Structures are given as structure tokens and as C-alpha cells.
Length: 241
Image (cartoon, rainbow, N blue to C red; front, top):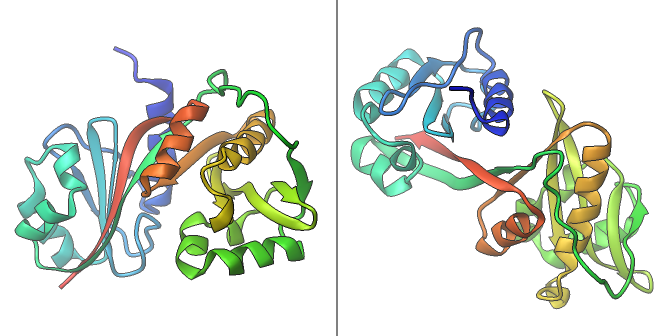
């Protein structure tokens, strides 16, 4: 039985980010656990857990951490592996990040946004109006959005000179476009995130890239699903105690 193309491409991405030769996803109940100090699945010295489909890939910073993870988490489902409460019951945990849901979009799956009040226009990532939007949103929302890290053109909806919503993407390895979206607090609930994200996603698809949407907030996940992104995985980072 052939693998879902989105699952296959997503796994190839995270296998490369594991930064360990031969990295591969495990099978249901048997996650692959690797010692990979240079892994990008989690912050340095943390354990990174990524599930895509029904398989999981886990990277650990040391042999000791890998052995602990392997003995504690083998047998868990993909959903349980990225549940912080479950992991904390089985491992000594100092902190966690996530879980975040991983969504991907097939080349022919982008859905239209319908009629909009104002067209999206384009700015460079360094534009002063984007810095103002990041400041207005505050450190937490700005950091969650990842907008400060975009390497693509940024698609925006403006009211005069003020940017109400912005979206772009960061170029990742394996031809991946990691979407970053942010809406000004006072402009939320008007469909602007969907509008600018549609423009950024279309730009990524036209460049032959795989759009990726990583999100924790339910509102962000709803925008992604409305555009046609399909949730195929989850990511959890664990700092061992």
C-alpha cells in the first residue's frame, strides 16, 4: 500500500531536521528514538517528539535520555506520545513546549477565500509597518506567529498605513514553506488572517514548495483547515528533569 504523498513529504522533512544519518519514523507503538544532539525537532538539550501519520520520530540529546525515552514511551500511540500529561507521567519532565499540530497542503487543495473587502498587497519582510504590527501584537503572539523569521514576500491587508494582518513564510529544507501569520489584536475575527494566508500559500505553491502550517491556538488551526491544510502530525518538545 503506497503512503499518502503529504505524509511522505512531511516525514522526509522531519527526518532531515533530525540531523542524524538514517533517521526514520517508527511504526505504531514503536517510535524511532535517536541520539541526535544537533536535532532541530526541539530546542538544544531537549527531547523532540514528532508524529506524522501513525509513526513517530524522537530525538534525544544523550544516550541516557534516549534510553529513558525508549523504555518509557515504547508502546504508546502517536496521540499519546505528544500528550504532555501522558509523557510527564512516564518520564521526569522539567518543561514542555506544545503540542503543536502540523498541517500540510497538497498542490491542488488550496481553497478560495471568497469576496474580500480589500485586496492583499505585498511588503518586504523588513518593512517598518511589519515591525509595528509585531510590537502591537506583543511578544507572546508575535513569537507564536513566527512572522519575524519570514524569508518570503509578506502579504498584508492595510488600513491606510497600518497593517491589520500579515502572512509570509520561512524557507525550510526539503522545499518547505513554513507559514507565518499574524493579525492585529483589534482586527481579529474579520477573516483577514485567512485572506493573507491564502495569498502567502498561493505564492509558496507557485514556487513549487510544500506549505506547512504549525499551530497551537485553535483559531489558527481553523484558518488552516479553511484553506485546505490537512493535519497529519504533531510536535512536542520535552526538557528532561
